[in-house]
Image (cartoon, rainbow, N blue to C red; front, side):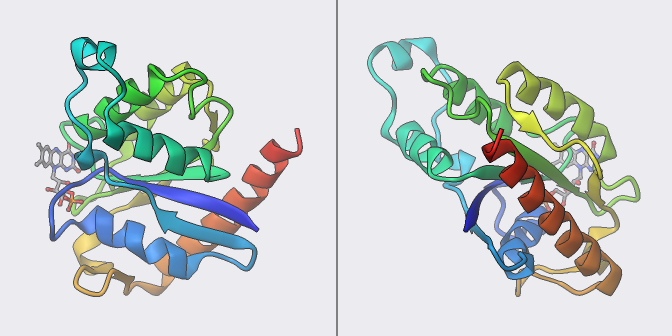
Amino acid sequence: MTSVGILEGSLRKASLSRAVARSAPGLAPDGLAAQMLPSPGTLPLFNQDVLDEGLPESVGTLEAAIRASDAVLIVTPEYNWSFPGVLKNAIDWLSRISPNPLEGKPVAIWSVSPGALGGARLHEGLRQVLHSQDARIMAKPEVQVALAKSKVDVAESRIVHADTEAFLRAHLARFMEFANACRSD
Ligand code: FNR
């Protein structure tokens, strides 16, 4: 069994991207177990002084959950043509842990937006930061869930657009293969 930890990029209750993230376990193929990682909203803002006193418990909890996952799927909105600060904050914390739990970790990105571009502009910058962690990024196919209000039932955390559901299912199947290939390297 391959395990994927899902990291959400939005903290709000009625989040479109969180609903997509929560739909992912139900879209996973046989052999792939997907579950939500602790929210990056549980972490304090990064501060070197805090780190000098010891790693916050919440960071250690996220670290352990990532270590226990064979791969990480980031599902996030786009903020100002980039990815949200909560994700950068989480990566900054994780990057201070040795060994870095993201190092060598297979990672894929799904962006979600009510807009027509689907968060396309965040991918390159997020990949760049993940590269700095030596994560193993599955860059293609890119996943952008555009016009998400018509594709996601937020209350049910369910994809209600057949083509989008099929695409996400296929992407997860491919991501499982990618993660397994990384594991056998
Ligand atoms: C946005 N939004 C947005 N959308 C987009 O497609 N590209 C962008 O650059 C931005 N920028 C942006 C900045 C900030 C600070 C906010 C709060 C919002 C709109 C955004 O996609 C929309 O609010 C989503 O619903 C947020 O995602 P969740 O919380 O629904 O997952």
